[in-house]
Length: 245
Ligand code: CA
Image (cartoon, rainbow, N blue to C red; front, top):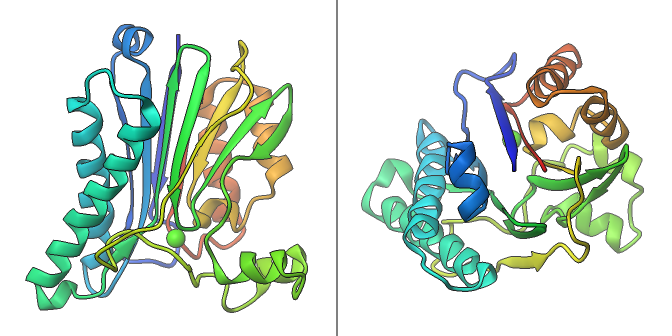
């Protein structure tokens, strides 16, 4: 049985919340039967376009997931991100004020004791087990790329002025390059999957996320992390979603 909880917060500096999240199904009993899909998106674009992009992407992904029957999760996830890309891209072409809008999109599926992830952008999925945290996704960001190429340390990346530059996003182009993976180890009782946008993990360290998860219930854990990001400046929209087996 999966428990799930999510919080999104506008933060302290932004006038709009361009983050969006959802999960399916909402009812715990149905989750046991069908598994759980979590979708988190962090939109970008002028005016209200970022908000539109993240909402369109999440809705399109959920639509594909809900109408899938019996396909392997990796295939459905890939199709879900492609549908999200098309929905955002077509809207950006149809409306000049939305031209160039895009979004990150991170999807996590838990079914039985298995989990899968589909991912584009610099939001993150983590697995927390027995107080230890592991990032499941790779950041598709310029600074992460520079860290991988050893041109920058992770500490420098956290404060670099280019830290918001993403190298992949949903909806900007006609095609999207998607990471899809199965979490190699079976889930155990108490394992917690955590999905965050950069307004959270840009201000809160991984071990602080693990600490909040280890201390107790999902609702207070999410609230504590959002409060921490706000205390540290809250310069961006802040989103965290947790699911626990
Ligand atoms: Ca953000």
